[in-house]
Length: 454
Image (cartoon, rainbow, N blue to C red; front, side):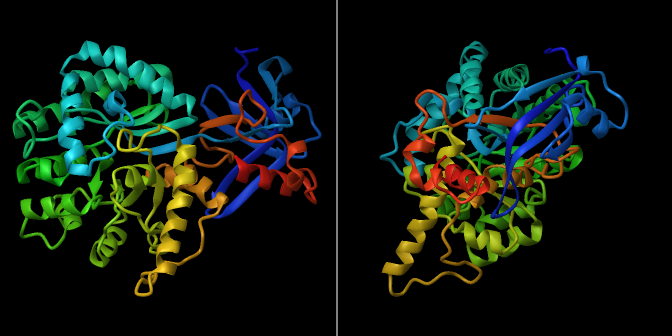
């Protein structure tokens, strides 16, 4: 019944529509209209047939032949797709390599060299297909990608993502200053190619905006590799086309020093982006490990978002971001894998690393007599439900699509995954092997405990 217009999923549905609030609907039905990709309704403890449920949801009689029922097993649940708010598609070429180096040395020894090889669009065609498929296998239904400086290879990346069926932001990286001769571009080329890429990506998708899978995103690599003129031009393009913006901010102390030296008249690193119209409600700034108080205030006032990349922050020794403080300040926070600074494309790993980073920060404060939580922060450990929120609804907010994605509610887009905790080689132990789960007081509590294991 793959041709049926409607699908109804029957079983356990899990999401976190609010930070810290795990919603488990153990016996529920969720309907999807395949023609729009949207959820048409959710009913708990359903007593009607799938066709009757669909008829009730859409307000007219729907024949059973138009409805496909999908029954989940006792070990499966339906959840929102995972959202990776920061990753570099070409850096899979050196995944897990060079993590003995600090950020700037790592960029110069590995990153620029391997990214420069994508001047060959045929390499992009061979390489990106496997990269995107691998990311999708990790349950990521929406990702913000950095490409390279090369126009044609970036178009290949966007086309590959669309063909595989993932939702994505894709950025042509801009680098016209302080870059190696073999991997650099003129200001004129950078801005011209960025605008041409925008036109290509939008023009390749003739459907209305709500059905668009791939959206271009303005992508200055980071302040040190962009001139005044480049940043100014990118800010103008972001405003002209009302596009999202992504870059790196306050990842590493040496990077911050480098950025400040390039723009010595700016009061802070974050203020450089703000000056050129690149820090606003459509902006995703990765890392933000070493934000000053004034920069946190600027992020809040500009309504910019943060992509928390704990694996990369650990792997390159950049530090620990205080996401509790960001959240308390009202700054949207999501999770990023930051491949290849991070060594895995798994958002599950990012969730676990986010919890570990939070606990490491708490332990550091506990063991340092002169270290106390900053104003607005706390020593409350990050809970499993909060990590899941950051990977789903929180990520959707960072991407500016929280009204469309991130939870499983009627009228939202059905970006979702089925998790099977009894799959071959599953890291989640069986219920019978875990008395704490087996002897739980009620099904909802048992599911909560299993999700913590997950």
